[in-house]
Image (cartoon, rainbow, N blue to C red; front, top):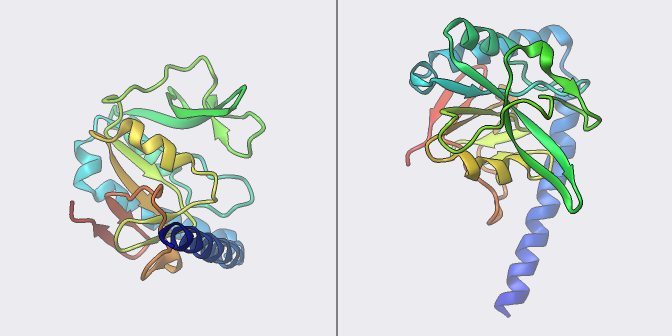
Length: 207
């Protein structure tokens, strides 16, 4: 019976996530470019105010996917470089069994290229981060809640890569205000973030 209940709960959670993704994608796509830029800048300002950011020697950013209306943190990238922080970006390398994921050092944002997976990533020759190299990871999401749970696109990229750099890295999920929900459906493999930042608030998650 327990096995049946576990499978049933997993299916309920999976369906709830799928429906949430559909609604949140539609809501985000309805935002005009000017609104995206303004909200992204407000989020960036809050990220730069974090003690986690100020004390970090290195930061893992992400490039917004074209046409997805994701948070644009290019100003955080620029500020980090001015502060002489080391900047990393996520990558996905194809393997025989699927993909290998992680973060690579990016000396300049112009190095980022779309390698056919829908987002700009570092070239394969760029140095790869090891545990201890990254102090702060900025994480995109379709939604987040006040407990640090996030809803991604369903591929599990950050659920699989964050454990490789935490600890010592701290994970900050960034979302627009309407993507911050009271509670998200959670599964065992979902990885919680340490801080939630939206355009109108910062939520520090208790350890």
